[in-house]
Image 1: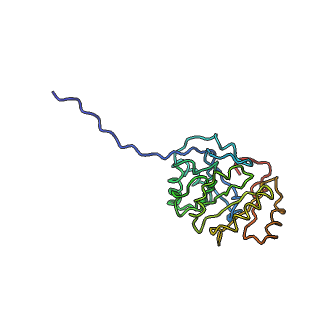
Image 2: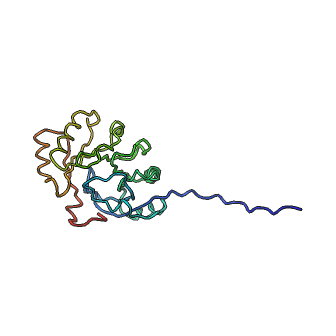
Image 3: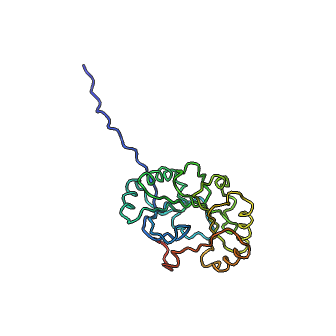
Length: 228
């Protein structure tokens, strides 16, 4: 007697899942593309706890979403520039293939990263904006310093400066490391802690090859904490 035939299994489509804190359309507030309309994808989670962090709500808040769902949402925005941020976006392994998907679809992709996660797996077409953790961040010891020796020509380096100690530490690093030559280096004062003009004066006095940047979005929409 013949046994029962098993129903054929249909192939399942693999799904890339991201834990997403928020998706929004705004003005890019930092870096060399400051002032441009930009789509933002903020992922949930961060292994660091910087003293001055202004997005602590992204440490835990978020929902699991399919990659295709997130892409469909940002495709409705009238721009082709997207910033992947956090938290620390690269703490989610799924962020790496997500960046490649966006690039393949014709997006210009910026990735804002703390420098704690190795950048080896990041698509070479993306722009990494690496935040070098200064002493006042409380997280300098957790930098993955090898990232700075693997930067590509298009990548940018950011130092968030809280006081004179942070500035002098950053100045010394800037002068001793070869990766700074010909690269965009951003010095950003901690908002409402260090006056931008004071930081600018220090840079001028020392003739540093650094670009002063403020968080433009905080001046455009003072008091707003999310979706900017």
